Amino acid sequence: MTQSQNFPGICLVTPVLDEAASFLPSLRQALAAGGVASVLLRHADIDANAIQNLVKELAKPVQETGAAFVVAGDPRLALEAGADGAHVGGVGRELTAALKLLAPDHIVGAGGLPTRHDAMVAGESGAEYVLFGDWDAPLEGEALIERVQWWTEIFNAPCVALAKSLSEARPLAEAGADFIMLGECVWSHPLGPAEAVREARRAVGELPA
Image 1: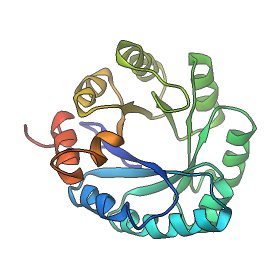
Image 2 (image 1 turned 45 degrees about the vertical axis):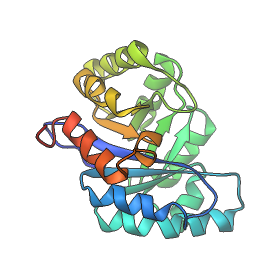
Image 3 (image 1 turned 120 degrees about the vertical axis):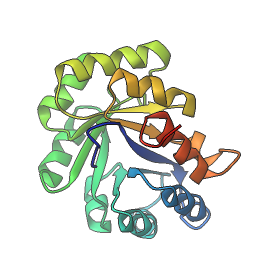
Image 4 (image 1 turned 180 degrees about the vertical axis):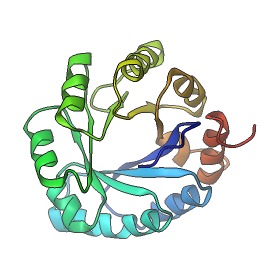
């Protein structure tokens, strides 16, 4: 994931998917708006072959734009299917195993960090980024902004903040987030995913308002 020096990068997270075909049009529209640094795939509880097929179908259009494609869950499956890395929840054995398998050549990100201590452990273990406000450790409003401010004032590892709505992108950018992650607010935007991404890019200062 590549971040500009002047504004946060935009990351996207998919809905929980069990197949690619119905989601691909929305993904392509979002990518067409430009400026997407990475896409994080969340997949349903499906078998390994189905996950690999899902990754292979979705990774190609993402990687063709120069963005990173990261898979939440099993790092070995992510690697075998051609993803750029894996996203792991928590700081236990799964993170240790992912780092051993993937680092330093592939991305290993950490979410599910409910406490400051968990975040510090993830960063000190070698996670390439920490994610705050995600589905495994929800933080919202001022609590999320405070966690982002705390992290960016002390640590060098990139901080990703999950914005539940496009209106949250600017405050999180001003708090110092290196990347803003967006999900449902992009896929359900009334003017389509491309306009949602452009709106987010304007919010963080990448595009003129």
